[in-house]
Amino acid sequence: MPTISIQCPDSVLISLKETPEKFAKEATKVLAVKLYEMGKLSSGRAAEFAGMSRVSFLQSLGEYGAPIFDLTKEELERDLQNA
Image: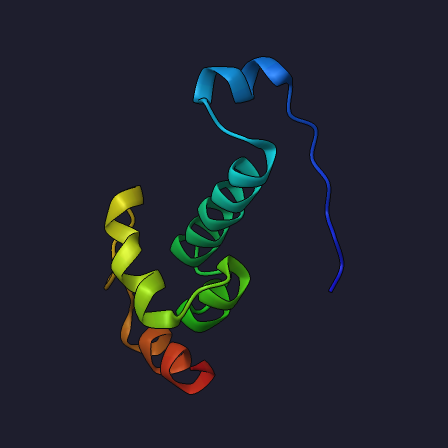
């Protein structure tokens, strides 16, 4: 699996009171949620990217203000096929 690096100033980690490892995990989850919300990833693929089960991923969407069921009929059908 490819690794992608981002720069994060120490001051940001200090402000967030996060370790680099915890921040990376949270940032990955936030990105997965946003890609799902934008319709770029199915819930299954976004959950895989976030390193969690699909059910856990869907349950966590509310924490980020992302709708669980904001899909058109076609999107829902595609999502179910990709699951």
